[in-house]
Image (cartoon, rainbow over all chains, first blue to last red; front, side, top):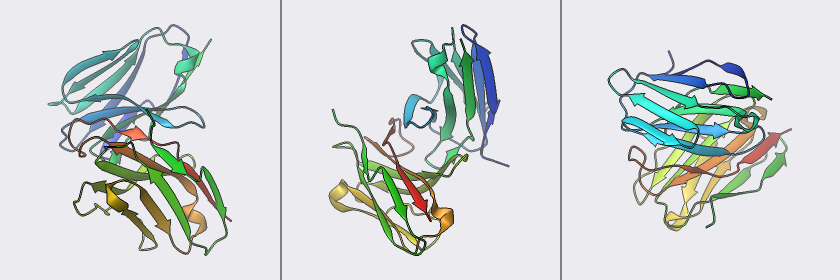
Amino acid sequence: KNEVEQSPQNLTAQEGEFITINCSYSVGISALHWLQQHPGGGIVSLFMLSSGKKKHGRLIATINIQEKHSSLHITASHPRDSAVYICAVRKTYFGTGTSLTVIP
Amino acid sequence: GAGVSQSPSNKVTEKGKDVELRCDPISGHTALYWYRQSLGQGLEFLIYFQGNSAPDKSGLPSDRFSAERTGGSVSTLTIQRTQQEDSAVYLCASSLGPAGGLYEQYFGPGTRLTVT
């Protein structure tokens, strides 16, 4: 069993749709990270959260420490949101990523 | 300001050769991480440096891999006697404070290593 599980693995959405990516983890943590990786590009940290909810523009991340679960939401999705989204805990455990494609 | 830089951006080497990959973290960042990402695979932790503490080498896949961080700044990842399975993108990241704390990680662009 992986310490970090993400779902779905792949997601295709129409532009404007509301998107949710889920992450469950089995280890104790002080913070959880959401990362974004564009095709052929580097990795950008989107969020680091230890409790509750954070919002940056159209992106929202939530975490429930008791349930060991986090979600990443994208409101009004856009083709430029197409990327792989990765959930990470501690420095060693990464989800396998969710590949998002937003179609115009 | 300058982000995390890595060099070279691409490296092609013959099986059995040694390679050195360099990472320049953001100035003032005490923590430095090395990861690798094989084609179509997820991120894999390799090694972690924090200040003057002994590095966490728990992710190094074999004794052919080693890394050092000089003066708390630049880091070099060395792979000896490269094998084809070492082909991957090697990523470096840094953060202002230690792993486990509420410090954002900043990733470099990576070095794409191809072993022929």
